[in-house]
Image (tube, rainbow, N blue to C red; front, side, top):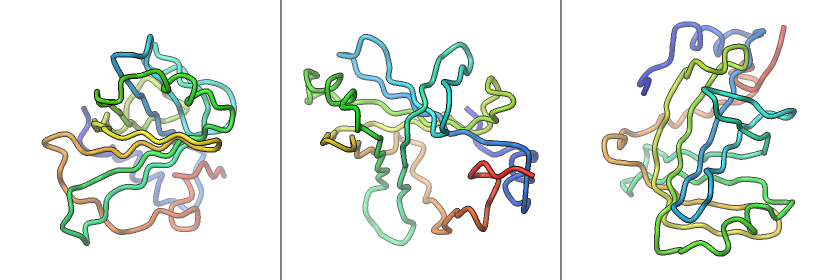
Length: 164
């Protein structure tokens, strides 16, 4: 697991424009799934990273605030408009937790993990016609607070796939 970002990653994130595109990868596992669910957050084709195929599917991870005293919780919201996630997860035993892994890669070098994987346990899953939402708790050792700063396309254009 990489605990910090590479100098290339940090430099590209703070540039006004960059040719580099960073991609978030999410893997969701559960003993009832035949194979893990793997997604990446960019439009287009699937991405192969370290021999695993990640399908394009919109998702958002809301990181915990450092301002409150509650248990650090991450909320993962994934597009479920095609109801695929509902069909795959409906018959699963809800007493057993899901495990969620999140990593960041460069699209130009998908086998090099820039950051992660961060591991979360997800005791709760809620699906509706539009989204699937996992409420995740950080695994032990990952209980550091996250900065409250917001990453926006204006402040960190390369993070959002802006090109020169």
